[in-house]
Amino acid sequence: MRGVPLPDSYDRGLSKQAGVKVHGEPDAWVFKDSASGKLTLDICGDCGRAELQVSDFRDLYEKYQKSRDT
Image (cartoon, rainbow, N blue to C red; front, side, top):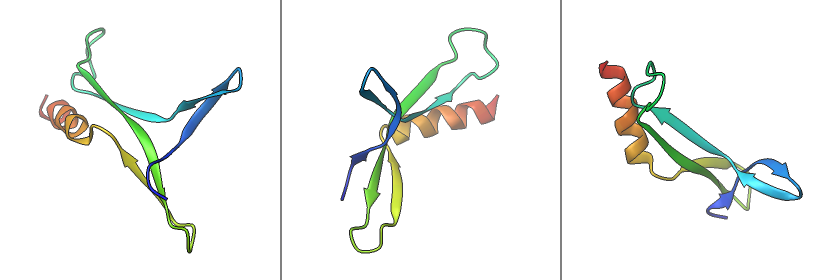
């Protein structure tokens, strides 16, 4: 099964999809130059192994690299 949403929390019976956030400027008080992506699962129908996938991974990685350079 590919692209199964990963719920993070439930509010009034509705699920919120889990995600990740990376700050390009983590020490800034505001305007942290953030990127975010939603998490989904790929699940094997034979053994149940699950792998996480994140959307917008290139933008997340660029922000991560920027935060490491400062």
